[in-house]
Image 1 (cartoon, helix red, strand yellow):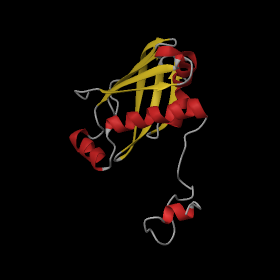
Image 2 (image 1 turned 90 degrees about the vertical axis):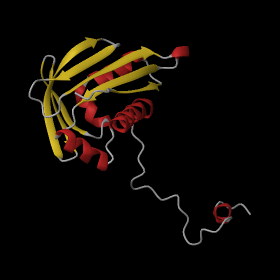
Image 3 (image 1 turned 180 degrees about the horizontal axis):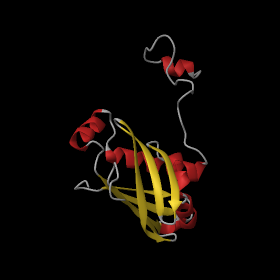
Image 4 (image 1 turned 45 degrees about the vertical axis):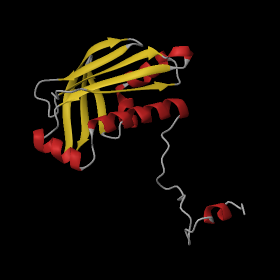
Length: 174
């Protein structure tokens, strides 16, 4: 697996038990991870994952190695996985009763080895960015009920001239 694990953390303004329960429901993972297509529990402590890779879909089976209610979830891929990986999510109370601190640690071998890792870099899929985006999305879902998107929204760009002062005129300020 990768020599350097990816570690990203955030604070979610929800109680630890709620954040843990949401994350622990494996079927929720594709809701907040844009790279996961499905995660299905196949038996107690075993899951089947399908993700979008830089060269196509990749699938693997994993086992849960730690499941401490409201504290830690950890997993690792089983032997023969297309993507050898291991991860852990830790949940702790944020200081000042400000929700839950969530820390994700993830290590994996890129599908396709060095060529796959190079293809991922070319397509902009950096591991740190992927994990940070995943945490941003889970935070939005838990705090707001949805992930804000800009697709299909009116543009903030002005039409016509882009001369200085135009923005103030558009807003009705002279």
